[in-house]
Image 1 (cartoon, helix red, strand yellow):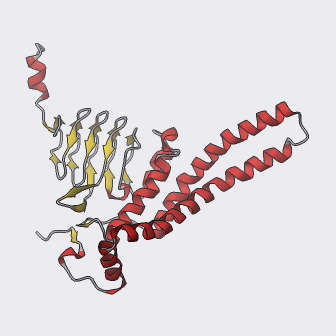
Image 2 (cartoon, rainbow, N blue to C red):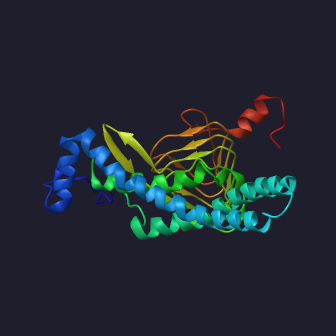
Image 3 (cartoon, rainbow, N blue to C red):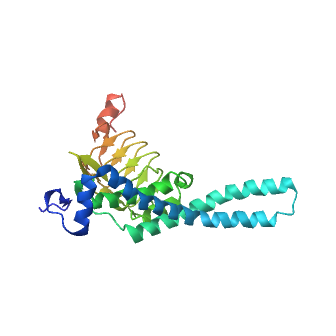
Length: 270
């Protein structure tokens, strides 16, 4: 079967502007990283600024409306407008970041190659946009339909009745969660991993009616069958396939015979 993961230009000749960029990126790593980060930071400033604009407008409106009030009322309204402004900012960011991602990045694709490449830069920006929401606001709306909407707009495929009680998710456009999936608190899901000095981006697929326990970790290339359970604090290494209906646990995770353990603890198998 043909490998679906595109190989990076480390195994083929680089041509055109993309090739020139990647040769410079690998030859002058520190300088090129600094140069490359400038437009990325400017993009982040644009996103944050756009998300803060409604908050600033609201704050100025409240300030103007209370300018003739007593200092106590002004201070109270000032404090309340700042607090409300934060939630206005966060809600706006939930929509602005995915919009920019759709325009600038789009969906990620399966890939294996050098960290110093145009494709890895695309991966970096996609996750950077995800982290802008994660580390400034997303925790306050998780779990909720608003958080699910954010992940869907970032490209994640989410089935009906699915609950995500974690923000430790990277590469959302490479993740599929089918119907009635339960993601426990602080679960880490990353659709990538490092191998032999290369970056590998590979999809994560979680079947219907699966339960992922508290603080479990699922890495790139993993497939979890319908009705399977991953126990808390377990780690699924890259490319792990969990058959339907099975229970896995441990580090690294492996199949666990729950009935056998139940009997060993003195309970009836029935």
